[in-house]
Length: 259
Length: 272
Image (cartoon, rainbow over all chains, first blue to last red):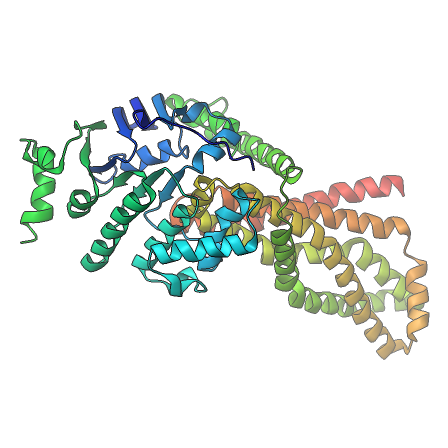
């Protein structure tokens, strides 16, 4: 496969979304989303279940098509790309699924090798093994290399899912509910891993989450989808100091009710 | 999935719930169109580089391994039972010596391809539907797509290719096992020697019979592969959707196999 380098200046937005709309039959999910994310910036997107958070990152990665609006990733308009161009762009995007989405018929090693073998045809088997060991070391799971996904815990699956995206050295990471279904200590480990990934790989991230601790720890900016639109992104304090009933209820549930 | 098929489906279902004829008829033709696009996508990916040789070999092994025991057993039993059932009718006319010829014609022309295809549809087609359906609803196929790989090529093209290639081999094997069962029964009852049985059986079989049988098996294999993969690759609605995909894959491929059998037999008889 041809690996087309997509150059982008640090000042340009790596993700730029203008007036994005998406509905499913009569259900309007996204109703005019605008946002720009710059190189190295990390933004957490909050919102109720079914508010369209996952739909947003699926549109960014080209898994879903928008009804209208402009979605540019690394300067390329996603829904205007040919199949080949989209495939090349996706090599720059890492997508960590809520369910981890590990290939359950393959071992951890085969899961990690899968995208590498098919997209970096010039790599030798030795190079591939080195890359796998390195990325497993980065997520702290070197010992699981020969295990099957069914033998891993929920937290380990999430880590391997992240490792599978990191092996392609992405410029953008999209996390879909990275801490959902995990115990608090594992959540802390995943949050730390997200921060390590941001520093070590210098990626820009969108973190879709319900978990305010995750949002506060991992993101530079926070926003929330309400009625298909974004709140103006700001720091965690800015967003939750606003007198907005939705953000207040989110905050109260996460921090006050847990006291 | 092909985009055009999705667009057509949206036109029929979404836009004000208006249908050209009725919901069922419209969806039937939309489904046919989607299958047509699916097959077109298969041939496009089949001839594009790089080939997934390793996975094709793996899938060939899976197809053979999963059906081998069942096919051996049913092929053998079919040979014995068909021989036992045919003997009284031939004996009535004093034509028991024609038994090997009759059995050879029946097994090579019809029973071996049909029995093998029906077993493969049940055993392999259902697994294809369930495996791909499960991968679809657990987002594994999406994960392959966003990692810049081609899940259609890796999952669908390899499976359809494997069963299309393997079914003719399995049909030949079923034919041989069925003939063995038949020989054992004939030898037991009429004390016919193996060379005599073989000589009588082969005399009635022509090249056209064998090539038509292999051709049928290739078509059946492709049908089972397309039905299983199409249902699995387009599964929705969680575990219920996976079950439906596996079930529909089997029912649809069995139905199509009988339709194809009828058409091919007509065609072969016309050139015989």
